[in-house]
Length: 115
Image 1: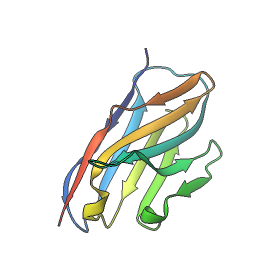
Image 2: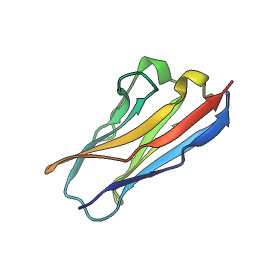
Image 3: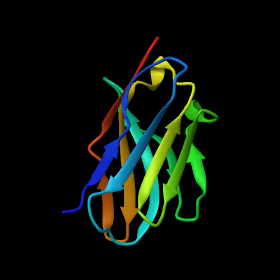
C-alpha cells in the first residue's frame, strides 16, 4: 500500500524557517487537492493550507504571509515552506492528498519552535 512520506521537521528558534516535504512511497492514482494539517498537543487537528490541482491555495489566517505551499505534479510531491516561525506553530504536521481512489495521510512530522 502506498504511503505518504514526510520529511523536514525539527527544532527551530522563533523567527526561523523550515521546509517540509511529502512524497508518495510509490505510484498513486490521479492526485487532486493536496494539503497540510497540524495538531498541537491537547488540540484538534487543524487545516493549515490547501492547494488545488490547478495551483489555487487557501491558507489559514494564522499562517498567511509566513507559510507557502507548493506542489510538484510530476512527482506528486507537496511542500510547505515556513518562515518567521512562532512558538504557537509547534505541532505535528501532516500532509493530506486526495486522489480519485481516496485520501492519503502522511505519518506526521514534528515541528517545534522554541521561544
